Length: 318
Image (cartoon, rainbow, N blue to C red; front, side, top):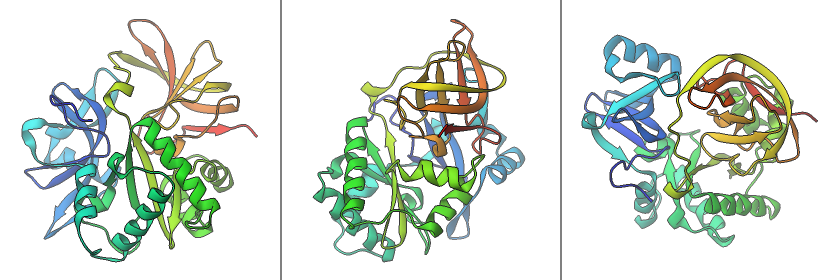
């Protein structure tokens, strides 16, 4: 599953000698560095979670070596030199360790155990799963979510279908109003609550187990990746309406939608909110950054040119 020369995948965490934990966001090296985003900072004996603004401010002030401007994508994110990594936290190893322990350590682990039993009942193979988020580094607390990784497109859609079947069977719950509102406040972005909830309710990549939200996120296998050696130049912001022609990579990271627009035939989303947002045949409205491939002149529309994607969105025209 992992390539020997670059074993880092999205949803992994990497820890540095200074006590910083970054979430990996890229499949490929960037000038021999790992593309990532700062998520936790060592605080006393534990870890403190930081948001995008706090992360950028802290790095600018104390660790500017981890701020990175990608010439390839004309974008700013974080990147860590492989030599600076003290620990590589891998979701699939964390889940294996969890499955090998006899009893859960807390209420959240008990819910995870119950959830996995249900998913297996509907045909999910735990060999394709991993555990990320706060549980990857043992920093879960009351109110934490369960964040599962699914490796491979086929396994992901099988897991999504298992979630759908388990919801229909009443073994797990759809997000109630309170959990959906919490989800919206974290991720809602430019959509209003009603629009956000409508899109989310049909994805089956989130649900709840005994009142706790869980999330499944896909990580592609090496053979499923398109190697992106393009160099993109930003060309301003655009809003378009178009029909989705191909949604096969809608749950990838980043999500891809092929649309019937000659000027920008592809929409790409780096924001989790707009993963799985639309189906083939649906008309969508998109606001995003226009990027042009400097070699071919091919243009695309990017949603999530910043992590919060202020002013950018994808929504189905109903």
